[in-house]
Image 1 (cartoon, rainbow, N blue to C red):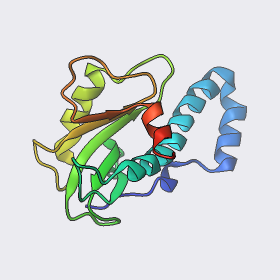
Image 2: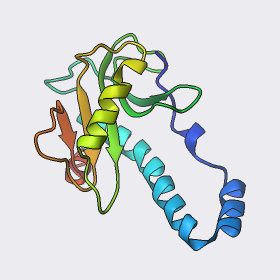
Image 3: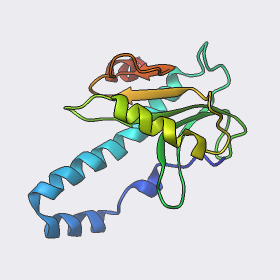
Amino acid sequence: MLVRSDLTKIPSHSSSRSAAATTGIGSHRTSWTTRRGRAVEALIRESLLRLLPSDRWTDTDAVGGWWNRQNNPEIDLIGADTTPTAKSVHFVGSVKWLEDRSFDRHDYEALSRALLSVPGTEVDTPLVAVSRSGVGNDLPLTAQWSPEDLVDAWR
């Protein structure tokens, strides 16, 4: 399985500038939320690498993302043994970096449905989440990280 780089998902400066000029402020704010979320994913992955390997994932030496050619599904977090081609997938996860919405049941179910699309996963591959605004109660995640956890990784 290929653990992909973040850079292919970041729009070029010229395309973002022309999009902002033609679509107006409302869509620019929506676009900003999306772009901010994509930009923070690289920092989140690096922070998780600093927190791992851990007692739970002793062999996790790579954290990347995965998506197919249609970008459906698009998985934000793949914990694996190596990069760019993983031999073993240790966890699959999602990043929700929104001010007003936590990682909820809907997000969990979408991640669960997408799990088996990722090469090298099984039905029992652990699911994880990183959320700016918390995680809903009673979600069967193996791990979850908050902004504070990510900052602690750099201390």
